[in-house]
Image (cartoon, rainbow, N blue to C red; front, top):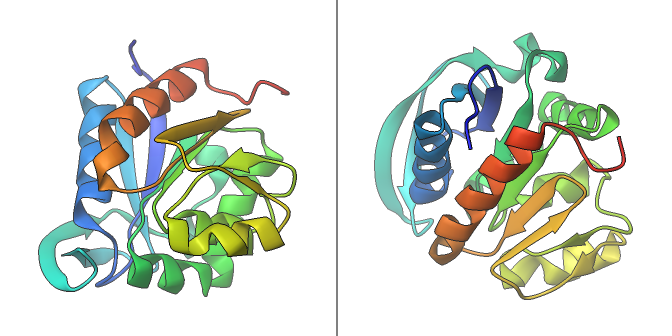
Length: 185
């Protein structure tokens, strides 16, 4: 599948996004021909973590979330990392940005603790999804249907549990981004 002509946003938090959950989906989209735009709380640079505690790499943030709109993108990727996901869900601009993808029926992928941002955006009710096990209760309390599976797809929403699920997660992201819209659109 090719993603030629598709512009996909990927989120990153300062000192908190889980590095493999940022790097591997980004590379998969680029290898499939898509364009990636890195969105953060502010433009410049952000450092990732490995296993939440160990320092990762430093990555360029293309644009600040306050300066972008979901209209500019064909899909969204939300990496995990406990600290990163918590920082992102605490930012109103970020929550509104995520919510807009659902309002526009655009495909979204979230892995590990990334679904915390979906909970905060109010978009998990009556949806099937997975995540890191520790946020199962948060998802269920928000009305989502949590399941312990490698990857879950529900009308353009792709979710996975941990970095071990990245191969399946990336493959499903490419499929959904190639289709371009939620099934109910």
